Image (tube, rainbow, N blue to C red; front, side, top):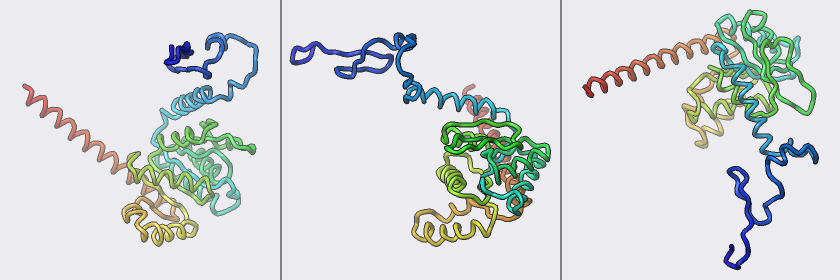
Length: 271
Protein backbone atom coordinates (compact mmCIF):
# COMPACT_ATOMS: atom_id res chain seq x y z
CA UNK A 1 0.00 0.00 0.00
CA UNK A 2 1.13 3.60 -0.63
CA UNK A 3 0.91 6.47 1.85
CA UNK A 4 -2.45 7.39 0.30
CA UNK A 5 -3.82 3.93 0.93
CA UNK A 6 -3.66 2.95 -2.72
CA UNK A 7 -2.59 -0.55 -3.66
CA UNK A 8 0.99 -0.54 -4.99
CA UNK A 9 1.20 -1.91 -8.53
CA UNK A 10 4.50 -3.47 -9.37
CA UNK A 11 5.91 -6.29 -11.44
CA UNK A 12 9.26 -8.06 -11.33
CA UNK A 13 10.55 -9.02 -14.80
CA UNK A 14 13.75 -10.93 -14.09
CA UNK A 15 16.13 -8.35 -12.55
CA UNK A 16 13.92 -5.48 -13.77
CA UNK A 17 11.44 -3.78 -11.44
CA UNK A 18 8.39 -2.08 -12.98
CA UNK A 19 5.83 0.01 -11.09
CA UNK A 20 2.63 1.90 -11.73
CA UNK A 21 2.07 2.77 -15.40
CA UNK A 22 5.17 0.87 -16.50
CA UNK A 23 3.59 -2.49 -15.64
CA UNK A 24 2.43 -4.28 -18.77
CA UNK A 25 0.08 -7.19 -19.23
CA UNK A 26 1.18 -10.80 -19.51
CA UNK A 27 4.52 -12.40 -18.72
CA UNK A 28 7.85 -12.75 -20.49
CA UNK A 29 7.23 -16.46 -21.14
CA UNK A 30 3.81 -15.68 -22.55
CA UNK A 31 5.24 -13.14 -24.98
CA UNK A 32 8.04 -15.55 -25.98
CA UNK A 33 5.69 -18.44 -26.72
CA UNK A 34 2.89 -16.43 -28.32
CA UNK A 35 3.42 -16.39 -32.09
CA UNK A 36 0.86 -13.64 -32.63
CA UNK A 37 1.53 -9.94 -32.67
CA UNK A 38 4.08 -7.60 -34.28
CA UNK A 39 7.73 -8.49 -34.85
CA UNK A 40 9.10 -5.12 -33.65
CA UNK A 41 10.78 -6.91 -30.75
CA UNK A 42 13.63 -8.04 -33.00
CA UNK A 43 14.71 -4.38 -33.27
CA UNK A 44 14.59 -3.56 -29.57
CA UNK A 45 17.70 -2.78 -27.52
CA UNK A 46 17.61 -5.99 -25.42
CA UNK A 47 17.61 -8.06 -28.62
CA UNK A 48 20.45 -5.94 -30.03
CA UNK A 49 22.51 -6.89 -26.98
CA UNK A 50 22.30 -10.53 -28.07
CA UNK A 51 23.34 -9.60 -31.59
CA UNK A 52 26.28 -7.64 -30.22
CA UNK A 53 27.23 -10.59 -28.03
CA UNK A 54 27.08 -12.93 -31.01
CA UNK A 55 29.43 -10.68 -32.99
CA UNK A 56 32.04 -10.82 -30.25
CA UNK A 57 31.66 -14.59 -29.95
CA UNK A 58 32.02 -15.08 -33.72
CA UNK A 59 34.98 -12.68 -33.92
CA UNK A 60 36.83 -14.24 -31.01
CA UNK A 61 36.13 -17.71 -32.34
CA UNK A 62 37.48 -16.88 -35.80
CA UNK A 63 40.60 -14.99 -34.72
CA UNK A 64 41.65 -16.61 -31.43
CA UNK A 65 44.12 -18.99 -33.09
CA UNK A 66 45.65 -16.47 -35.49
CA UNK A 67 49.44 -16.18 -35.48
CA UNK A 68 50.90 -12.79 -34.62
CA UNK A 69 49.01 -10.29 -36.76
CA UNK A 70 49.19 -6.72 -38.07
CA UNK A 71 46.12 -4.60 -38.82
CA UNK A 72 46.42 -2.47 -41.96
CA UNK A 73 44.05 0.38 -42.85
CA UNK A 74 43.66 2.42 -46.00
CA UNK A 75 41.27 3.79 -48.57
CA UNK A 76 38.67 1.67 -50.33
CA UNK A 77 39.00 4.09 -53.27
CA UNK A 78 42.61 3.29 -54.15
CA UNK A 79 42.86 2.37 -57.84
CA UNK A 80 44.25 -1.02 -58.83
CA UNK A 81 46.75 0.54 -61.25
CA UNK A 82 48.05 3.13 -58.76
CA UNK A 83 51.48 3.11 -57.05
CA UNK A 84 49.62 3.17 -53.74
CA UNK A 85 47.94 -0.15 -54.54
CA UNK A 86 51.27 -1.73 -55.45
CA UNK A 87 52.88 -0.50 -52.23
CA UNK A 88 50.03 -1.99 -50.22
CA UNK A 89 50.41 -5.28 -52.08
CA UNK A 90 54.14 -5.33 -51.35
CA UNK A 91 53.42 -4.56 -47.70
CA UNK A 92 51.05 -7.51 -47.41
CA UNK A 93 53.64 -9.83 -48.96
CA UNK A 94 56.45 -8.55 -46.74
CA UNK A 95 54.37 -8.97 -43.58
CA UNK A 96 53.47 -12.52 -44.59
CA UNK A 97 57.13 -13.38 -45.22
CA UNK A 98 57.99 -11.97 -41.79
CA UNK A 99 55.53 -14.41 -40.24
CA UNK A 100 52.58 -12.11 -39.60
CA UNK A 101 48.93 -12.62 -40.44
CA UNK A 102 47.36 -9.48 -41.89
CA UNK A 103 43.98 -8.04 -40.91
CA UNK A 104 42.17 -5.45 -43.06
CA UNK A 105 38.64 -4.15 -43.38
CA UNK A 106 38.19 -6.65 -46.19
CA UNK A 107 36.99 -4.14 -48.76
CA UNK A 108 38.36 -2.97 -52.12
CA UNK A 109 41.25 -0.59 -52.82
CA UNK A 110 44.12 -0.61 -50.35
CA UNK A 111 42.47 -3.33 -48.28
CA UNK A 112 42.25 -5.61 -51.30
CA UNK A 113 45.87 -4.90 -52.21
CA UNK A 114 47.13 -5.84 -48.74
CA UNK A 115 45.01 -8.99 -48.62
CA UNK A 116 46.19 -9.88 -52.11
CA UNK A 117 49.87 -9.48 -51.30
CA UNK A 118 49.49 -11.51 -48.12
CA UNK A 119 47.59 -14.34 -49.80
CA UNK A 120 49.96 -14.48 -52.77
CA UNK A 121 52.91 -14.78 -50.37
CA UNK A 122 51.28 -17.68 -48.54
CA UNK A 123 50.30 -15.74 -45.44
CA UNK A 124 47.01 -15.63 -43.53
CA UNK A 125 44.82 -12.94 -45.09
CA UNK A 126 41.94 -11.76 -42.86
CA UNK A 127 39.08 -9.41 -43.70
CA UNK A 128 36.73 -7.85 -41.17
CA UNK A 129 33.85 -6.36 -43.15
CA UNK A 130 31.12 -3.99 -41.98
CA UNK A 131 27.48 -3.57 -42.93
CA UNK A 132 27.16 -0.32 -44.89
CA UNK A 133 24.25 1.50 -46.62
CA UNK A 134 25.86 0.68 -49.98
CA UNK A 135 26.80 -2.82 -51.10
CA UNK A 136 30.38 -3.85 -50.31
CA UNK A 137 31.39 -7.49 -50.03
CA UNK A 138 34.67 -8.95 -48.82
CA UNK A 139 37.32 -8.90 -51.53
CA UNK A 140 38.37 -12.14 -53.24
CA UNK A 141 41.79 -12.22 -51.53
CA UNK A 142 40.39 -12.67 -48.03
CA UNK A 143 41.15 -16.19 -46.75
CA UNK A 144 39.31 -15.75 -43.43
CA UNK A 145 36.52 -13.24 -43.16
CA UNK A 146 33.58 -12.07 -41.11
CA UNK A 147 31.03 -9.30 -41.64
CA UNK A 148 30.01 -7.16 -38.67
CA UNK A 149 26.89 -5.11 -38.00
CA UNK A 150 28.52 -2.96 -35.34
CA UNK A 151 31.63 -0.82 -35.76
CA UNK A 152 32.69 -1.11 -32.12
CA UNK A 153 32.69 -4.93 -32.18
CA UNK A 154 34.75 -4.85 -35.37
CA UNK A 155 37.19 -2.32 -33.89
CA UNK A 156 37.77 -4.58 -30.90
CA UNK A 157 38.92 -7.35 -33.23
CA UNK A 158 41.33 -5.03 -35.06
CA UNK A 159 42.98 -4.07 -31.78
CA UNK A 160 42.81 -7.32 -29.79
CA UNK A 161 44.53 -9.48 -32.39
CA UNK A 162 47.12 -7.04 -33.75
CA UNK A 163 50.70 -6.40 -32.70
CA UNK A 164 50.93 -3.27 -34.84
CA UNK A 165 48.85 -0.88 -36.92
CA UNK A 166 49.91 0.27 -40.37
CA UNK A 167 47.98 3.24 -41.73
CA UNK A 168 48.03 3.73 -45.49
CA UNK A 169 46.57 6.87 -47.12
CA UNK A 170 42.83 6.99 -46.58
CA UNK A 171 39.77 9.02 -45.61
CA UNK A 172 37.57 9.44 -42.55
CA UNK A 173 37.46 5.73 -41.71
CA UNK A 174 41.24 5.45 -41.88
CA UNK A 175 41.66 8.56 -39.75
CA UNK A 176 39.20 7.17 -37.23
CA UNK A 177 41.18 3.96 -36.86
CA UNK A 178 44.49 5.83 -36.67
CA UNK A 179 43.44 8.19 -33.90
CA UNK A 180 41.72 5.43 -31.96
CA UNK A 181 44.90 3.37 -32.05
CA UNK A 182 46.98 6.35 -30.92
CA UNK A 183 44.54 7.10 -28.10
CA UNK A 184 44.57 3.50 -26.86
CA UNK A 185 48.37 3.42 -26.82
CA UNK A 186 48.73 6.89 -25.32
CA UNK A 187 46.31 6.12 -22.48
CA UNK A 188 47.84 2.66 -21.98
CA UNK A 189 44.56 0.90 -22.59
CA UNK A 190 46.57 -1.51 -24.71
CA UNK A 191 50.15 -2.72 -24.53
CA UNK A 192 52.26 -0.29 -26.49
CA UNK A 193 52.58 -1.32 -30.11
CA UNK A 194 53.76 0.48 -33.26
CA UNK A 195 51.48 2.82 -35.19
CA UNK A 196 53.08 3.26 -38.61
CA UNK A 197 52.01 5.83 -41.19
CA UNK A 198 52.93 4.85 -44.75
CA UNK A 199 53.31 7.87 -47.04
CA UNK A 200 55.38 10.88 -45.98
CA UNK A 201 53.82 13.19 -48.56
CA UNK A 202 50.29 12.20 -47.57
CA UNK A 203 50.68 12.28 -43.78
CA UNK A 204 53.41 14.93 -43.45
CA UNK A 205 50.96 17.84 -43.25
CA UNK A 206 48.95 16.17 -40.53
CA UNK A 207 52.04 15.53 -38.42
CA UNK A 208 53.17 19.13 -38.92
CA UNK A 209 49.76 20.32 -37.71
CA UNK A 210 50.11 18.08 -34.65
CA UNK A 211 53.44 19.71 -33.86
CA UNK A 212 52.34 23.28 -34.61
CA UNK A 213 48.91 23.11 -32.96
CA UNK A 214 48.45 20.15 -30.63
CA UNK A 215 51.96 20.13 -29.18
CA UNK A 216 52.45 23.91 -29.28
CA UNK A 217 49.24 24.50 -27.34
CA UNK A 218 49.92 21.74 -24.82
CA UNK A 219 47.12 19.47 -25.99
CA UNK A 220 49.60 16.58 -26.26
CA UNK A 221 53.10 15.95 -24.89
CA UNK A 222 56.25 15.61 -26.98
CA UNK A 223 56.59 11.85 -26.31
CA UNK A 224 53.11 11.36 -27.79
CA UNK A 225 54.47 12.13 -31.23
CA UNK A 226 57.01 9.35 -30.76
CA UNK A 227 54.12 6.90 -30.91
CA UNK A 228 54.02 7.49 -34.68
CA UNK A 229 56.54 6.04 -37.12
CA UNK A 230 56.39 7.73 -40.52
CA UNK A 231 57.92 6.05 -43.56
CA UNK A 232 57.62 5.39 -47.29
CA UNK A 233 59.60 2.17 -47.21
CA UNK A 234 57.92 -1.23 -46.85
CA UNK A 235 61.06 -2.89 -45.46
CA UNK A 236 61.45 -0.11 -42.89
CA UNK A 237 57.84 -0.51 -41.77
CA UNK A 238 58.09 -4.29 -41.42
CA UNK A 239 61.51 -4.03 -39.74
CA UNK A 240 60.08 -1.61 -37.20
CA UNK A 241 57.26 -4.06 -36.43
CA UNK A 242 59.64 -7.01 -36.08
CA UNK A 243 61.98 -5.02 -33.82
CA UNK A 244 59.07 -3.94 -31.64
CA UNK A 245 57.80 -7.53 -31.40
CA UNK A 246 61.23 -8.74 -30.28
CA UNK A 247 61.51 -5.97 -27.71
CA UNK A 248 58.06 -6.79 -26.36
CA UNK A 249 58.95 -10.48 -26.19
CA UNK A 250 62.16 -9.69 -24.26
CA UNK A 251 60.20 -7.45 -21.91
CA UNK A 252 57.61 -10.17 -21.32
CA UNK A 253 60.36 -12.68 -20.51
CA UNK A 254 62.01 -10.24 -18.09
CA UNK A 255 58.71 -9.57 -16.35
CA UNK A 256 58.03 -13.30 -16.06
CA UNK A 257 61.48 -13.85 -14.54
CA UNK A 258 60.92 -11.07 -12.01
CA UNK A 259 57.53 -12.51 -11.13
CA UNK A 260 59.04 -15.99 -10.74
CA UNK A 261 61.84 -14.68 -8.52
CA UNK A 262 59.29 -12.87 -6.40
CA UNK A 263 57.23 -16.03 -6.06
CA UNK A 264 60.29 -18.07 -5.05
CA UNK A 265 61.28 -15.43 -2.48
CA UNK A 266 57.80 -15.49 -0.93
CA UNK A 267 57.87 -19.29 -0.81
CA UNK A 268 61.31 -19.21 0.89
CA UNK A 269 60.15 -16.61 3.44
CA UNK A 270 57.09 -18.67 4.23
CA UNK A 271 59.18 -21.74 5.12
